[in-house]
Image (cartoon, rainbow, N blue to C red; front, side):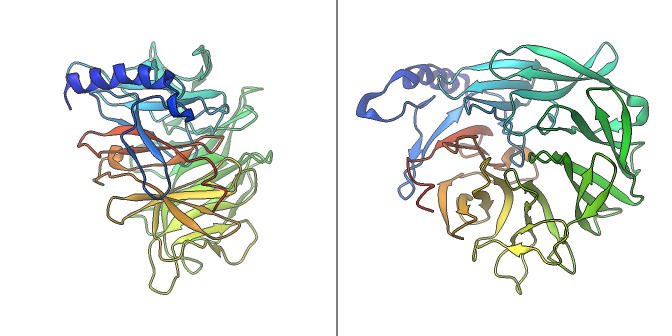
Length: 379
């Protein structure tokens, strides 16, 4: 991708944002294509010469008003990496952090983007308000405990839970910081397991969804739920309940259920499931022959979504209620080991935008797919 192409796209973004001819909702950039079946219109978000990605789709990096999304950029040539917030109304993007881009904390559809930043020799948990861009320090992280993962912040902003590894190769523990009192505690210490993908529930119970990879060589992939009081319970996932989870899982709306994908199994109709603590068997999701990889769930909890390995790497959306699913868009990415080639799709809080990453033109960028009015309801 050259700088002229980016400059051309950037100027077109502003004109497209204010053009409302034909009565359609204005897009924050020039439409690249319209899906012939779903009517979804695709635009590039925050076009840049640097590789970019959505960060992750399981707990979306998008605000509660559905106007702003966070994008991670990687250094290229003379330009440093960083994190920016893109406005879905006018296409503008504003830097939040310049430098090596961290993996921000999970805090789905909130008013703040939480992330780590090294400041004067200290590791600081910070947050940026999506709308105002105001940045404030939340807590200094005690790095003497070990290497901090990204963590997750509860929906009510009270707690921060994070996986911490003492030294390379060690199992990791899950630590909890009460942001109101400043008190630290250990939520999980399970020898032989690496704890990752910590995600706070949004149902008011203050539960942390955790993935536990048995060391070494990921001999098991367990999924559990941690209470802030320290109680840990496992979902029915991995053998003998399901094939091995892929490591992609998400809470189902404001409920106590999770949605996850697993390896394919000739004895299974599909590879997507929902589960709740206390159930002996997970419930297969009606994706039929569709085999999902990266998954997410809408904020309302009515819809699931994920990408597949079919040609064009389509992103499909399905209804938990009806069991139906349809292709929303072809991502046209080419999957490699690089995270920026993975779609990591998610929906904005209002279910109007599907956000995903793609290498569709040979250069990793973030794309927005504006869903056609009424399309989701027809599922």
